[in-house]
Amino acid sequence: DMSLGFAKGIRERLPNAARIIDKFHVIKHANEAVDKVRKQEARGNALLKRTKYLWLRNESNLTGLQLEPKRSLQRRRLKTGRACQMRETLQDIYGTSADRAEAETALKRLCSWMTRSRLEPMKEFARQIRRHWRDILAYFDHPYTNAILEGLNSVIQNVKTRARGFKNMDYFSTMIYLTCGKLDLSTVTT
Image (tube, rainbow, N blue to C red):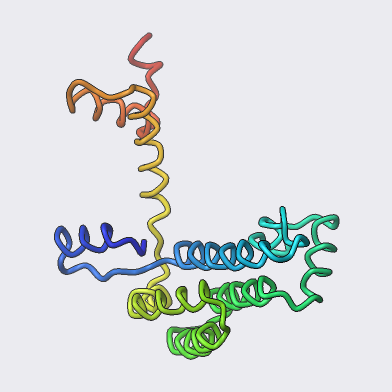
């Protein structure tokens, strides 16, 4: 996670832990940058209205009806098309880099391209990558994610919301165990 709160929590509670920023979070920020470019360009180009998901989805996930308009728009040399290519290059780095050194070289080239692109959201994203350089590259040494923790946190937040609060922590922790523990209660109730 690239949030400052997460980094602070790690520093305070796990001072000896190595921090790894997984590809999901990096690509999420890349998608946000691409969408900012699209929004800016859409103000002056009606062709880009209602095309958000054409640019944010991978081409393999687009239907034939969606793929043709995207390719047509890419031939127009739009700023959004360039931003999308940068995001796809980032995905290729994660998909094809054999080791940290190869990833570092490719990320340096990508950051250079984004910095010279004259697309402010992509330039800001390049600065963000540079601020978190060591933690992003750590993923290529240890490809771990916190996806399971984030999934559990989502379930716990849902339990909290459904209950509209708990009067004490014991009830809350019991509901967390019941929901996340996948306990077979049929043996207890019969």
